Picture 1 (cartoon, rainbow, N blue to C red):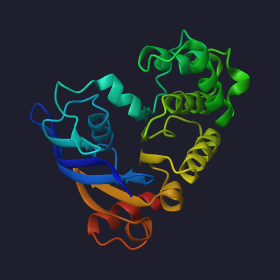
Picture 2: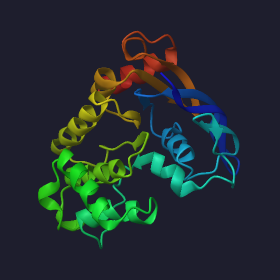
Picture 3: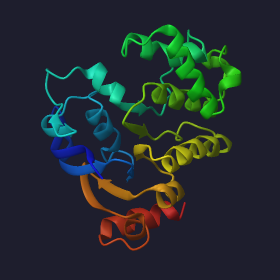
Length: 245
């Protein structure tokens, strides 16, 4: 499989606070990679660096072999290819569901409104939100908002989707409906990089699991190894604490 994304020696500091240190990993086409670890381990900052919402302090992010770190990258065009679904949905509250899924296509991709509407409807149907196209985000449940956010990201036709703890802001009964959408995307071959606390999802759907602690990748490998028979003591301790909740 071709490598879509390669992260090389990535570090990020905020003042004197080192949040990421010397991060190295890669994502191949069709891979689902789950990033796990305790709060504060640098997982979300890593995704924000990959999406260029934060500027790395040092290191490289290669998209199809081309370094995107630096001022020459058209960040909006890059983010259309490397989409992101946020923990807090980040929908435009003053726009309808349909318009939320159209605006990025018309503004960034310069797609005509008719085609943008058609594509938005296709993906809203895919996530089960077509009946709600005229609703505003405030009229939706958390699970519905997140499904709209996924449809919005898909409408940009990204090559890879980044998910930053997409279920952590949801009530427990809403989690399943979002995970079901993500599982169906994985089955269809969508390349996904998912920061998650949902260990069953990581075990069932991922090709690779990355465990982070204190801004460092401690261990990575197939879920059967990292989640079931981890090599590192830190991974074992995290899993024993997490699984015993």
